[in-house]
Image 1 (tube, rainbow, N blue to C red):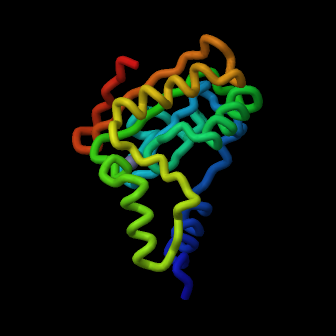
Image 2 (image 1 turned 90 degrees about the vertical axis):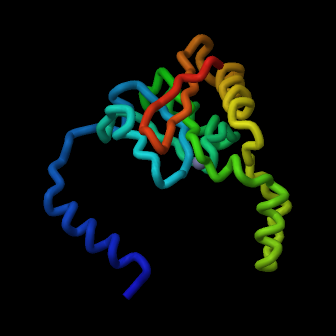
Length: 164
Ligand SMILES: [Zn+2]
């Protein structure tokens, strides 16, 4: 027994039913979505998308980190993306802790995380504004590419487009 047996068993069933879709790795709807790792978010479902339609980039807090920018550059120039939606969500765990809180929690288990930046979110609106500016002003992405922000409400399923 391994901690992953349930997943391998489920996949065996999935693979039996799986029909090759003929999809390529390009984003069929030209979309990249940056969202949170929160387990309540179904990015494809909530946006009416199917596998093959979009690149989904997930991390804690839907933050636009250097690695997200790196991935967006590849998504745009190699994999057919021509628009980006940054989609944080309500009730996000990253808005409930500070980096110092996380360092204190890990220290209780004798782990020193002070060399990591967690990009916690003291002000979600401000963080989204900052992250959209990061994408819009990076010299590595096409000027004028549509970039939008919207906050997903995990309790109602609604998406609220941001003013930024
Ligand atoms: Zn979150």
